[in-house]
Each structure stands twice: as structure tokens, then as C-alpha cells.
Amino acid sequence: MRVQVAIVGGGPAGHLLGQLLFKAGIDAVIIERQSRDYVLGRIRAGVLEQVCIDLMDEAGVGQRMHAEGLVHGGFDMLFKGERHRIDMNHLTGGKNVMVYGQTEVTRDLMDARQAAGLTTIYEASNVTVHDFDTARPRVRYEKDGPNGKEVHEIECDFIAGCDGFHGVCRASAPRSAIREYEKIYPFGWLGILSDTPPVHEELIYANSPRGFALCSQRSATRSRYYLQVPLTDKVEDWSDEAFWQELRLRLDPEARAKLVTGPSIEKSIAPLRSFVTEPMRFGRMFLAGDAAHIVPPTGAKGLNLAATDVKYLSNALIEFYQDKSEAGIDNYSERCLRRIWRAERFSWWFTGLMHRFPENGEIGQKFQEAELDYLIHSEAGARSVAENYVGLPLDFGE
Ligand code: FAS
Ligand code: PHB
Image (cartoon, rainbow, N blue to C red; front, top):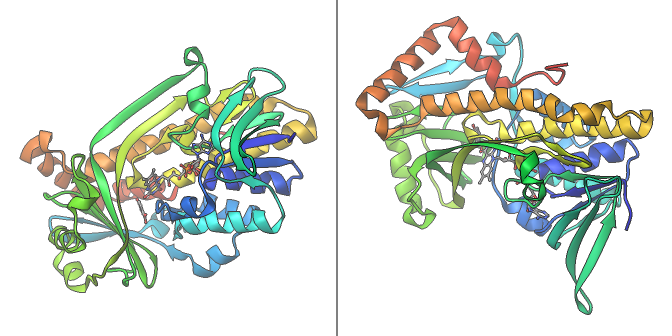
């Protein structure tokens, strides 16, 4: 097989890139190691920035998002047993975010790709990338065929590494050419999905001496909750009832009274890390999304950063093919990284403000409460939170 762009990874980044390239008449194939259902079964992000919403529209897949997504103009910060609203819409001159789960984003993109008759190779195994330091890179993979495992090779002009944190593309970059920055947090997020009405119409980020909690949602009848838990915890340590009991202890009296509990339809623990790869380009191979960077989910940035990487990469590839210019691909890494570090900083800062760090002692809790007290009583402080949460404009850094 020969294509212009081989996209490794069929998560939101890979599928958004495939759709943007298709719209520009550029031939791309997606190679995904899991099944479609497995990819859709991973419950992850829930909040879309305006830039991501606009990209879904540009990709021609925004209809269901606008019909079912929930527009939020603010969120609550809970500390010392009281909730305070950050009015993002007012503080940012009219910007909002949208609650629309990553699963639905990916489903919309997959459905559009299938409807257009475009190729996604699911359940590809032993995917490897080759010769990306030449003008003729290749991707190899194995797939079960009628006569057992068959080896396939794809010749292409470019490889897009959209294969997430544990993917093969970053791992294949020459060690001498790559720098990796990492911070691992001493706790994880235990997340639960339940078909219960959300406890509040907007999100609640809770700083409690017992640990962080987040009340999020997917629709008027489906809720998503998170609890900070020790890294030593296993999901089987947590019954649904134990989860609900602990969540109640971290909420304010009003939310505690309104909380509707029910059986979990998904429950998992995600580790938290800050991670950035520099650069994001290696010859004719480009990294985008979690393949290049990871943020602690506190700032709801992961999926949104993946979307903007993909927009910059699609622009660069379109410029290469249509204008015969390499300016975009030469500038890709720097263009992404300035935005990525801004989001990394905010996610690190917000994580440090809202989570319990036992090593910081009781005084650490008092410092956090004092900073939160400042932020909600200072327009400048609240605006800083709001500006970072709604995200940077697409032309940032131009
Ligand atoms: P993804 O990891 O989503 O997709 C990569 C794809 O590549 C996967 O389908 C994988 O199967 C495939 N792949 C991997 N190796 C391959 C190989 N060798 N060959 C072929 N395919 C390969 N973000 C938030 O904003 N809020 C959250 O609450 C949140 N929670 C998260 C929880 C977890 C457990 C994780 C891991 C991430 C979470 N994130 C969250 C971040 C998440 O939403 C990512 O930002 C988002 O999935 C990025 O999308 P992709 O870059 O497409 O990477
Ligand atoms: C979610 O709904 O999954 C979600 C929302 C906001 C975050 C993280 C996760 O900061």
C-alpha cells in the first residue's frame, strides 16, 4: 500500500488528523492496534475548549456535539466546605467550554471516516516505523489473515505518530535527538461513570483535607466523578458504595444532599504525570497528542492539546502538498511546544493547588486554602484561572 500520510494510532488525535487531511484531499491511512470498540471503551476526557469545538466543525463532525454537548460558562471551586463560582464567560469576555465526552468525539470522527469509505486498519499488531529520516518512510504491521499472521508494509511521504503515551513512534525516535521532561505525581485519579443526574449544572473542583474530588458529567442523566487516591490503590479496592461515601465526605453540605448515587458503568484509576517530548518532529515523522505530551487531567487540557497539535500538523502537510512549502513542517514543533508548555504549566499549577500532598503537612493545606481564598476574591486571580481554563486561541504564537 502507498499513501501520502500514514497515521499511527486511531484515538481522537489520529482520527481528527485523518478527517482534516481528507477534507484537504490528502490520502491517509490510520493504523490502530486495538479494535474500534476497545478505543471507544476507554473513558477519558470530558471538556472541550472552543478551539477543539471549532476543529470538530472544520472536520465536518460537529453536528451531534452541538446537539448533545453542554455549554458551560463557569465552574465551582470548593474549599473549606464552601463553593465559589469562577465565571469564565464574564472573566474572558464571553468564552465558554463544552462538556462532551472524548468517547463521543472519537465516535463522531470514526463514523465520518467510515461513511467516507476511508481506511482504518484496526487490531494491527507489531506496528513498526522505518526510514523516517529519508523521503520514503514506511510503516510495517501484522494482521491476522486467512493463512495466519500476515506482514504488511505501507510506503508513505510522512508518518504521523498519534499513538499515545505508550506508542511506538516516540519510542522509535533516535535517543540522541530527543529530550523528555517528566514529573510523576504521588497519587492517581479514581474515576467512576454512572447513569445518575449530575450533582450540579456545572463542574465542581474540590480541595478537601481528605483529598481532591471532581464532579463532572456527560449529559443530564450521566455523571463522571473523580477522587484523588494513593498510587498504591487498586480499582478492586473500591466498591461503588465506598466511592460514594468518600465523595460525600469531600463535598459541601448542599452537594452532599443533592448527590444521586447509582451503580458504576465504568471505574478506573489513572496515574497523573506531566510529560513533554522535544522536539516533536524527526525527519518525516511527527508526534501529536499524548504521543508527545501528557498533562495531569486537572486542567482538562489533554484532549484539547491533541486537537491543536493535529490542526498545526494538518496545516503544515496541506502547505507541503498544495504550496510546495516546507515552512509549516519545519515550524511544527516550535509552534506546538510554546502552547504545550503553557498548558503544562497551568495543569501542574492547578494540580498543586487542588490535591493533598501529605509531605507538605498541615501548613500545606493552609497555604492552598489561602491561595484559593485569594483567587476567588481577586478579579485578576480569578481571570487568570478562567483564561487558562478556556484555553489559548488557535493563532497563539503566530
Ligand atoms: P490516545 O492515547 O487517546 O490514542 C492513541 C491511540 O494509539 C490508542 O487508540 C492506542 O490504542 C493506539 N496505539 C498505541 N500504540 C500503538 C501502536 N504501537 N500501533 C498502533 N496504534 C497504537 N484528558 C482530559 O482532558 N481529561 C481527562 O479526564 C483525561 N483522563 C484520562 C485518563 C487516562 C487513563 C488517560 C490515559 C488519559 C486521560 N486524558 C484525559 C488524556 C486523554 O484524554 C488524552 O489527552 C487523549 O486521549 C489524547 O488523544 P491521543 O493523542 O489520540 O492519544
Ligand atoms: C471529565 O469530565 O472527564 C473531566 C472534566 C474536567 C477535568 C478532567 C476530567 O479537569
